[in-house]
Image (cartoon, rainbow, N blue to C red; front, side):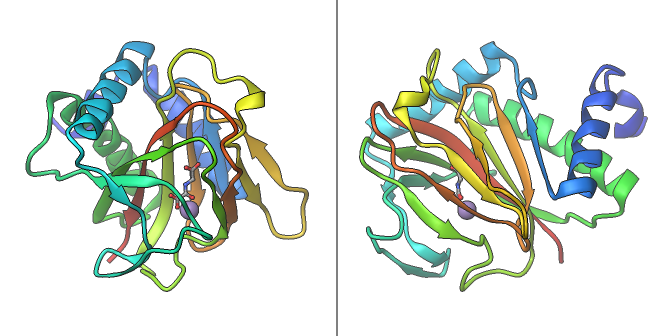
Length: 210
Ligand code: OGA
Ligand code: MN
C-alpha cells in the first residue's frame, strides 16, 4: 500500500490547511501537528542530549562553512543524525516524512532531502532578522520550526518568531509548545526576538529540493 492511503483521514484536512496557507501567504502556523505526549517525548530527547553536553554554539553559514557570531544568533544547536535516531526522533521523522510524501504527491514540490537540528535559546539570546538561505544553500525550500517548551510560554518570556512578509505587516508568533511553523525558506525574512525568561526549546529543519 502506498503512504498516501495509509494516512489517517483526519490528517488530510490539516495537511490541506498547511498547503493552502503556504500557497496563499508563504507560511503556515499549526497548533496540533504533534500531540502533547509527542512534544514531551521530543523535549525529553532534546534535554537528555543537552545534559550530555552535546550541543554547540550555533553558527551562521551552512554545515560546511560555519562562522560563530554571537551578535547575529545566540542559540545552541545539535543536528539530528537520521541514521542514529532515538525512539522520539524516529516518531518525529515518521510524521515529517508522511507530510513530505503528501506534499510531493499533491504539490510536486520535489522534496528529496531534509536536515533538522535541536535548538536551545537561553535567556538573553536571539537570532537577528535573516533569510534561511543566507550564505547558504539554495536547496532549502521550506523551513520548519517545532516548539518544545514546557507548559505555558507566557508572552512576557519573549522569544517570538517574527516573520516579515514582503510589503505587509510583520507577524509575531509565540513559541507555544506543540506549535509548528512552516515557511518558504527562499522568500520570507524572519527573526527570533530576545528570550526574556526561560529557555526556548525547538526542533528546526529544512525540506530541500535537488
Ligand atoms: C533558524 C530560525 C526560528 C525559530 O533557526 O534559522 O530562524 O523560531 N529559527 O526558532
Ligand atoms: Mn531562520
